[in-house]
Amino acid sequence: TCPKPAAMDWVTNCCKNWGTAIVEPLPSLVPLVMQQGHWLTTLSGLSLPVALTVAQGTGKVIARLEGSMLCTHFGISGPVVLDVSRHWVAAHVHDREVTLRCALLPHVNFEQLENQLIHLTARNPQRTLVNVLREWLPSRLAEALPRHELGLQPSLVMGQLPRDARRKLVHSLTDLVLPVERDRGWLFAEVTAGGVPLSEVDWRTMQSKVQPGLYLCGEVLDVDGRMGGYNFQWAWCSGRLAGLAAVKRDHG
Image (cartoon, rainbow, N blue to C red; front, side):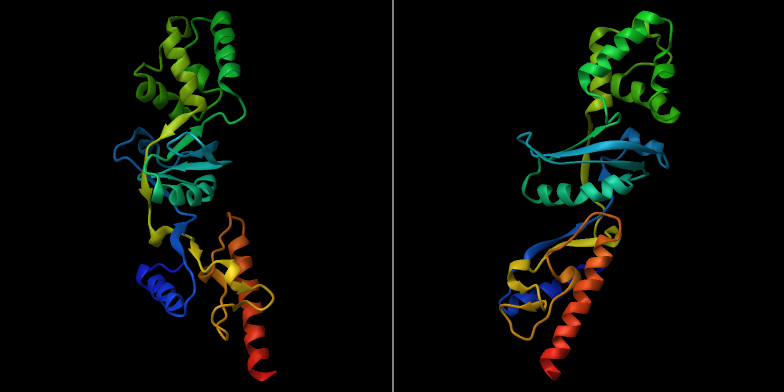
C-alpha cells in the first residue's frame, strides 16, 4: 500500500473531482496495537494458532478467522491478525465499542473445556496449573496467563483451584478479550481497503462509468483481500486489463 496518507488523499481527491464516489480508504492487513503495558506484549516473539472474533458493541459477530497470531512489543501481528484487521479497523471507525476476542484453544468450547479440567483435577488433584496449561499452550504463555488473567500463581495445584477461578480460566482460554486501541497505521499496512466502488467501473475494461477515459485498477478500487497473494493478483490483473483497454481506446 502507499505509505504516505497524503498520496492516497491526492488519489481520492482527484477521483472526487471527477465525480466518482469514494469508500473511505482505510489501512488493511495491518498489525494491531494493544493497551500499553498489556501482559501479552511481554511475550514478544511468541506465535500460536488461535481464532479471532471481531464483534460489535452490541455483541453481533462481524468476523471470525483462524490462524497464527504473533505477540509483539506493541500488540499483535501474524497472519490471522492481519486478515482480521480489515474487519476491526472498518468497524472501529463507527463503533468505538467494537471488540476483538481470542480463542487460545480454537476447537473446544466452554463446556467441553470445563469438563476436561474437572476430569483432570479428579484424576490428579496435585498437578500444577502451569503443568496442565503446558499441554495446550506454549510454556511462556502457560506461565503468564494464570498470573495476569486470574491473579494466581502458576504453581497452584489443581485441587486448590476454586470453581470461580476454574471458570474464569476456561473463559480466558476460549474467549480472551484483547484490548486493541488502534491499528499500526499506513506505514505498516500491506494494502488499502476502500476506494472507488466497483459499481462505478466497467469490469470488462476497468473504465470509469462516471468519467470516460479514466481507467482504474489496483488499490484505487474498493477491493482488498486476505493474505496469500490475492492482492498482488488483483493489482496485476486489473492493471493489465486497464492498460490494454486504454491502449485499445486510443489506438483502436
